Length: 153
Length: 212
Image (tube, rainbow over all chains, first blue to last red):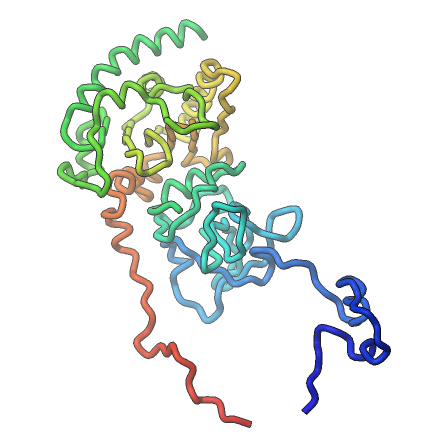
């Protein structure tokens, strides 16, 4: 049985090299390393948390993000994204993600999203899942989503 | 502009008395609906409802209208009476003012207002912002109208008060007054089906996979 060290290129060990810096080590590995993943980006599966019919009727494919409307493609709480739901495109607002955010903001166990029309009106009428109150401080039109939410976190 | 503000203050003077009268009624919500038929139609307001963390609606708190948040929040620009007088002056239909308890750390008052047309909503919102700009001091933030490209729902967040301008049809769909008075007991919330796992859902790992 051969024990293989994945964290260190084996070829270099034979020559007795000292451990390299992480960037140099990555170059030696000869495969590409992608940057740190964002909270919600293209192809993430999201959970629709309002009571709209589009979000709650079962479909054989989960709703997926296909575009994030930010400068970089990373979506945090309060960003608008484009979802592919039931074979149609729909805009949505992120209300919680699994990635830890700033200190003293809630981190959710699922990537929550609220469906929104093109003019900014929410598609559903109630949100049962807790919604972060940090939405209020952000620049953008979030009062409507906060108005239909039941609990705040 | 000053004459307008003086007129508003005079109207607010009359309004303040009626607000205090409403405050002394039992229950912790002060619901100001000038149209009693509309109020009955909105309906289902449980007067004896004791929501968890209930407080007494003392006239002292109503008159004060300042939030005790340290740091960011300064003296709020708008008094509730001034704002309601402003909305009445703009011929707003069915002004519904809901006083929120301090446990909901969102705002002091939640107002839902109907308008006759999209242009009416726009005009009301713009007038409210105009008066706010006149009354505000340097330390207060500017306020912007949310829902500029919608024609049926506009919203303004004044810090201590939130105002929603909606058309009657939109108001029927969303029923915000029901949600904010009944909170968890709202019927639209109750109608949302519970997300339960199917009965044959298996938590533990199974021995389905054959070892190679």
